[in-house]
Image (cartoon, rainbow, N blue to C red; front, side, top):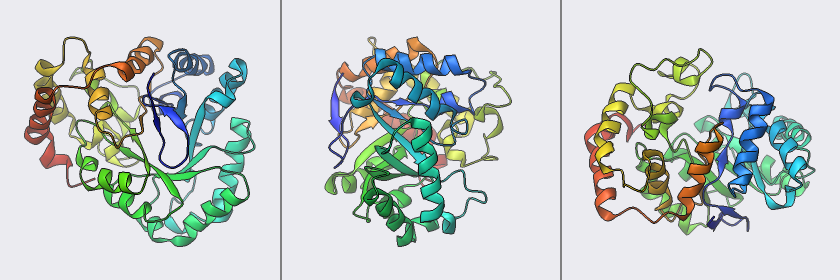
Length: 329
């Protein structure tokens, strides 16, 4: 697989990583062995960047990752990024302080079985947190203590990303970027590249819409966010189907079908479209199906999309997506 530098961290990571939200919860039931099998499949596919969070199954995802890394003896060969902050209740900006973040980091160190976390990201805090220097001073203190090696942020909005990278210690930004969420490719990517900030693209398949395999009449389990968060009832609406009203999403997918290159599935086209943006360090699709994980990893070595295909994607975005999504995030 191909590797890219993750900003100024000096980590070289596979350009297709592995996201583990699916393992931890909000995507239906996943048992411990199914979670371990998914991590094994990612490693077998050559992936060496894994993204997780302390709230994915309340530590379930972190623990499964640690078990497989120990089982395979590959801790020194894999970069693991985790997140902290969403366990706050209430989830308010002023609670993103040293005391709380230190506690979350200690718990993740225990669950991941390591003294030093390689990369910790603030987990989509309220916008006000980005205007609190003390929040980023807390992260710097944790770095100086050796509890974390690097830190970054996971954001909902381009505005938050641009504000976060004003802090010199922020080395990575995780942001939703896909064929239905194209705004980051404007000013933010330019600024991230200028400041040598790594970009981690999440929700690359728009909660499965961009696999082209979902149907309009599909019903999701009660504990799947595609059931309970379609209108943002549980967390930011942009996390589910990239914020696009679901019927509009299916219309956009139908408009894309005729533009999928013969050598690719729609999911692979969606991932390749993301990787064709040089500012992206790695993209982190998630799955619990080994065959899907292998197919995702294969995109690393696929040729870039043609100008014609990229133009068609932009046309679909402007016709079906732009008005509903572009200025919201």
